[in-house]
Length: 482
Image: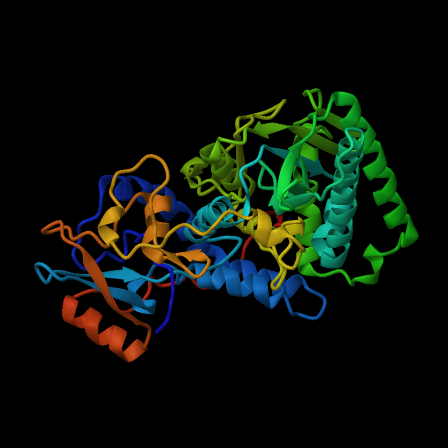
């Protein structure tokens, strides 16, 4: 049986029972903009990439595949879960997802909620936490976007500096302990630009042995402005030494189409606003030679809901659908969360420029976006002593009540939330609640065989073919994203 996570239905592929809540319908126009832009311009975008590449290879296959799979996400003709109410016999079809990590808003949002819930329920013990954010100069962002091994080295420099500062602060009080962190690698900025940076969630203390032999959190004083400035100087010195060790590192990789798009996306905000940083001038932050370190966000030990919100923020998707609109001239308008210092409060791009920005946000395959270090590492000694116990699993599906503004009780399968609980956390939809009688539905099967899927859809009078994708067309050279 195929275990896939269902996603919301777009307006061209309805659920068999046709009963969707009102906020589903409100989200459809926003969702349609992104889907329509990709559907109408993806073949043109990929064709131009192949024409401009040196060997006619175009973009890497993982980029093309992710954009293509997004067009299949949430369509009944590509597979679905069949659910039935045991009380009244009413059935519904829930489509499957593409599970992409960079473009699909539904799948990235599901991954955000899943990761945050797993961390709070299964990994992070009750302790105060602080978010450390390291931003990098544009030259370094480009190198890290191109070289995954270099990204790992820079991240280790950052975390070792923070851990060393914590251990020194603890030793000044006569405490010797271990540090830990959960870090998210983000590749995007607020202007849809390529901005590789790190969000690290670090306990405000060290884990030391107590009198009973167990590991306990020993809190330390929060960092001051001088501490953050000293850490920034140390991190900048170490990263510059790493890059100076091999100054021609970027030139070893031949120029390609994705590299040209990444270079354009890295410099996007610089052309509009100048070289500034959002954390400059704030407390518990420092800005030096294009590097920025911020440590002003803190969560108390008993604020587990705030901790989950912070984890969701650190792992959020690169694109906010509510700020995406299509202008009458066919341009893509993206409303900025922080308006530019000089200019309009929205970013206006051609469809090909917009797809070029999206392509740079797609992470390379087999590279983790959420990383565990120190005592939270999978094989760390003592990790089992500090992680919270697993929540009790329940088979009573009626425990998930809706609407629920905060955390939703869910069944834990292995380490992941089950697909119905994920839909509950992300979209506040109980897909296992019958729309006819209010009873509980159960999953009959996950169907992906094209012949079986087509037979069922024909019987229900639903389309068996996806919406047609526009063919490649010639576009003016000034529209190219590179």
